[in-house]
Image 1 (spheres, rainbow, N blue to C red):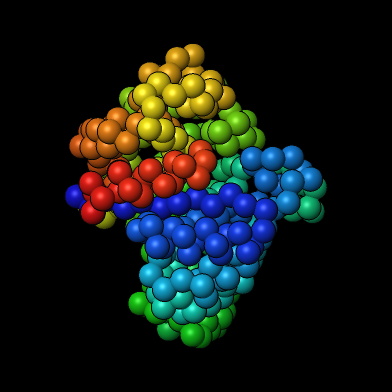
Image 2: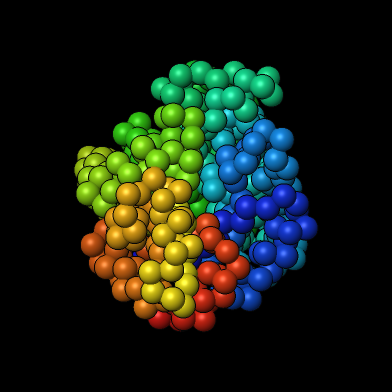
Length: 323
C-alpha cells in the first residue's frame, strides 16, 4: 500500500492568497496543494472571482520548496494538448519536479459555451482526454509526434522536458469511460462523484448521497478489473479522493451538522461515513481515516477545508498520526 498523503484544495479569489495558503500548507506538513481549473467558480456564481489554474500553480511553485503542485483537476479541453504539455513541463522544471498533472474531461457546460469553447458529448470529451494524454507522453520523449482522431503533433519538441523524464498523471472522475483510461494511463486516480448534472459534489446533493462507500468500492473494483485486463497491478495506480473536511474540538458540533445538511445528508452520521466528507472531532476523524484506508486502499486525500480552525486542528491532532 502507498504511504498516506494529504493534499489541500485551495479555493481563493486571488493568486496572492493561493500563494499564502500553499506556503502555510507546506509548513503544516501537507503533501500537495491544489487549485481548480475553471472560468466560472463551481463554488460561487459566474461573477465570483476565479483565478487561472496554471498561473496560480506557477506562483505557488516559486514560493515553496517541497510541497507538490497539482491541478484538481485541469480540463483537457481548455488548452491544446501541445500547449498543455509545455505548461506542465515548465511548471515541473520550475518546481524541481514537484508537479502532478491532474486532468479530467471537463464537465461545467455553461463555462465552455459562454467562453466560446465547444462542449461535445462526454464520449468525445473522453476521446480528447485520451489523445491529450498520448501527446503529453510523446512530448516528454525524444519522438514527439502523434496523429489521432482529434489532435496531431509532428516533431513538437518540448525542451526542457520534465525533471524526471515524465510527470505523474492524476485523473479525476469515476465514470466507466474515465476508469478505462485511468486503468491504462494513470499513476493516481482521484475518485469523485459523477458530475453529469453540471455540478460538483458540494453543490449536487443527489449525486453526493448516492456516492456512498459501497459505490466507491464498486468503482475501485471496476478499475482493478480493467487494470488486470490490461496487465497492470492494483498498486500501479494510487487511489485518491476529494473530500470536505470539517473539524471541531466539540463533539456533534452544530456547524458541522449544518455542513452535512448543506451537502444533502438527512443526518450527521451518514455524512460522517460518506466518501466526500470527513466531519467530527480529531479523534473521530483519525478513526474514520484509518477505517477508510483499510477498507478501500485510498491513501491520497485532498481536502477542502471547512474553515481555518479545521486546518489548524488537522495539522496538530490528525496529520501526525499518519506520518
